[in-house]
Image 1 (spheres, rainbow, N blue to C red):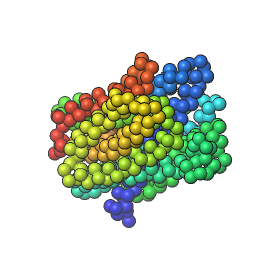
Image 2 (image 1 turned 90 degrees about the vertical axis):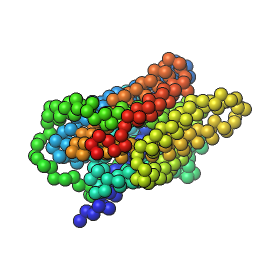
Image 3 (image 1 turned 135 degrees about the horizontal axis):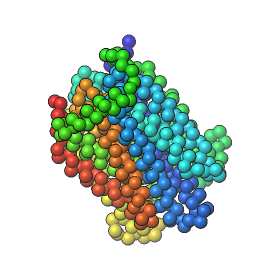
Length: 454
């Protein structure tokens, strides 16, 4: 018998299994590796070092833009199809496969035969798999517990568990595989399996490791999470799903709170993703950190995220998700300002002595704040969506939620890429993030805490 407790824990394990794509690939290991390797390739072609760094950041941004557009177009349509047929689990299986293939293929990104196009293609494929699988698993949240007030606690605990999974995966990577300047891992060992740092193998292994991690820890999800028997045996029809989606979109003005929330989350989640996506690349280029340094930074940020997701879930259960979302947006706006002000020789416009550790310490503090506020923001945003959505169309609603997160998901990477290109500066390239957070915060004024369907 599958009890409520088992079902909830099975659902938690999706966050544990999938989080390393964000932690290891998007932010702290593969993202910086891509930037570093692409920079070296561009320098070898005759481009100046600073220009090459900015161009590599721009390529990363454009790659994420393309993947984000694909997710934005298909997410609500597939959600509508799933609601119409009553079937979600086959989609979870399909996109789990894309996750594994995309992540595993990143092994073939050695510097000697590095292809920017193929690296971005396989990374984007896995990212699409992760994002779509998340849409369908998120839609199970309202069914996990009969008391709607428990959603905040469950969502926060799930996100905290996911962050913890990211920490453990990152520690495994740094302790056993990733070589530092000495050629040894953080545990003082040579990289496992004789992986050669000269070929980037100690870093490239992060792709297969992430794929294997997902395969192993998705087992509890597939064992304990069950969907209700579909009311009808309607087959999957793209056209029917698209028509139902268009009907929902036409009706959005009749639900102003849902519309405002989708717009608000569109901007602030895009800004947060920009922070996650470019944080490691920023530290690599502006502060001259190594990938090992960035990994340690990632552990701090992920631990902070796990703790405050758990705390935020309890606060959410007590006072609702809205105050949590507002507070986190304010913290992240201030953090963005701190990051933009950092250089190797100054902070907040104040000059520092050469070799001062203050910029490094400040960036560690910023990482802890991003982990804490970002994690709690995402967990409470997921809870808020369950209150804003039509209960009968929950998967479609999370498809729209993904659409709102991806409709402008190209915006932060594209703006960062554009400003990086125009200014030739990584530091100035990050400035659009603060503006996107502010836009998201302002739109929350029109959001009802319990939504239009209460």
